[in-house]
Length: 303
Image (cartoon, rainbow, N blue to C red; front, side):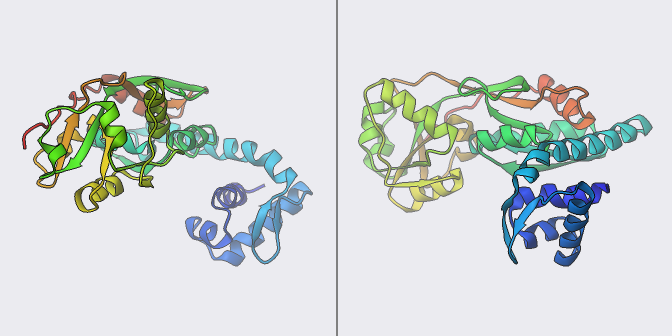
């Protein structure tokens, strides 16, 4: 059995599209299809249900998927271990981060590349559930996600920082003149928020519900960039995290306002899969994160 064919299979299972899987594997689509057929012949089982297009994995395909993922991950870890013994750590560290934690990514990447000059880092914006699933599937080496709410299972974690919610509004509006705002006032405003598939939104909903309040946004998105665009240009308001405050300080069209009746802080940290042996990349990310001294977000109140 060739590992290349397992790579085709795992990539197709993730992408659920033959052309995209072939592109990611840097082969022509007929080559990918032929490799999958050879894998099926080798195992004596049909792994993929297809009819000129991908339909689904077969029950046998789903049964072997975690083992195929593990074999590929172990092979990658073995090669990384050989390279690390031969000299400086090299390769691409795959990092997933929730949207709320994106402002912290630069600090971690700077520390990682300073400690390991030959290292490259690939960052993906993902939900907390996607990060957990990708770690188990060995599609990620590390993730930055929430630790204090819906903590991921089967991981080792190191705290990075705590965040609070703040109210984002457009400069020049009556709300922008306020030095603080209540949760009840925020709930009555025209809002744009992350969608309910995002953990940040579920935390926010739960906190408001505990205060007897509900949130009914005019618009939702899966990106803070989209939310801030709707605040700056769409006459809406948002509830975001103060981890973005330093990046937005002095923005001519945006104001961040603290809550006078603040919800409890949320702890954010780095996670890696808790499975020995740890890959050199995961071990490096965990070690660097444990020494990282992130600055506390400073809320910009200047108008």
